[in-house]
Image 1 (tube, rainbow, N blue to C red):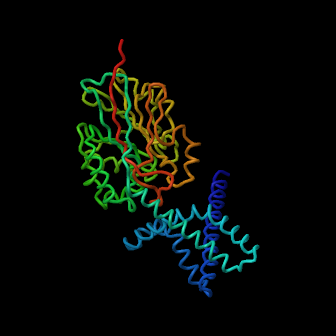
Image 2: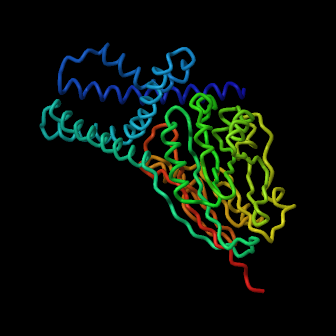
Length: 387
């Protein structure tokens, strides 16, 4: 019975997906016919379905297609996801506008040409501005005060970048930019709060990302945790080994005491406890910190910002998160805002300073219209309370 329900849901989702794709294609051929007339249905629909299904084709056939063809199909398909989302929002308005113009006695083809040209201009604006936001990261500054002693440290400068999503779309050049920008900040420590890779570990090896990511320079080194996409990829042990080869420990429900001054607490991602990926669950925050010297600052990385209250209740002083991308493409940020207590930015909760990044890389289309790609530059001042 459970299998039947699962198959039914998959079929329903697939039919909706194909129906939306057909709706976009139908509007496209109406527009081309209005402008040029006599467009070949066979040629149009053949080309259209290759474009519309290019991402799916690239993933299903990537092991048999020539590498460059698979790469281009994935790039096209990634951008098409943005077209798909905004078509769902724009095309019903466009079709209604055509109906209004025709009701005002404007010829059908003229109405379609006018409205269609406006819609294409909007698409172009979204893709251009969204690409700019995605490929031109900003440095987001935060300053917090933790009321604890940290050995001889009076201040700690943290550079953090979540959601790199390294793969075939986010590649070597963009990773090199991250390393250069982070090193310009001269941080004391570099933290990577999950989703370093975009599911598959193979591009990490193929493009030798390890030779670049090991280039971070800081006083206390670089540490990472797992995100949900590492679990989706399924080769966690191999990924951890590649990161450690690059000199970056991946903390999986582990803690590290740095310079006898503060702790880095690295949680497994929430996906570890879902059972979906066949992995053991993760420890509670209480279990992670119970044997630590809590008179020292506790800095935690937890990819998904789903346990901020738990962190606050168990003595964490600073928690760093990613995952949400702040929706990445507007108006998705309205959804992430409802799903998470904090989907982006800063929140003070008791003694906890929680920060959620919109991420450095992108998932799916390299388009950001609801957020910017960002690097976090966090200054932590240590100021113990007077007794």
